[in-house]
Length: 76
Ligand SMILES: [Zn+2]
Ligand SMILES: [Zn+2]
Image (cartoon, rainbow, N blue to C red; front, side, top):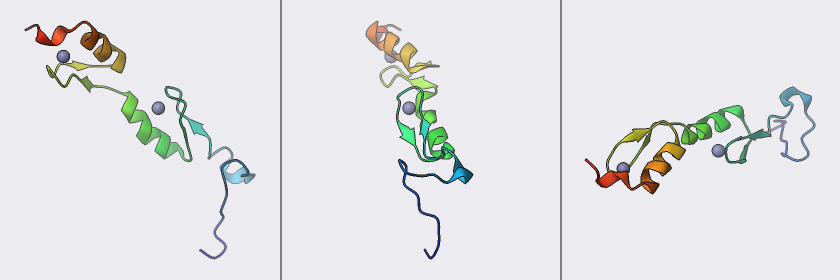
């Protein structure tokens, strides 16, 4: 409270935090107010991705999706 600096994403002109309100995720284009939030969010895009049916793991969500599309879960 008091004289704490309040700023709003679109109007913020405070040089101190530069474009601190604009940390876009390059993978899904969501934006985040802080680097930390972006970093936390970015974990969602990193592996390992586990197939919930057969519990195989993949390094990217695309790999997992390809696996699911190929219906490999039933193979043993
Ligand atoms: Zn994202
Ligand atoms: Zn699977």
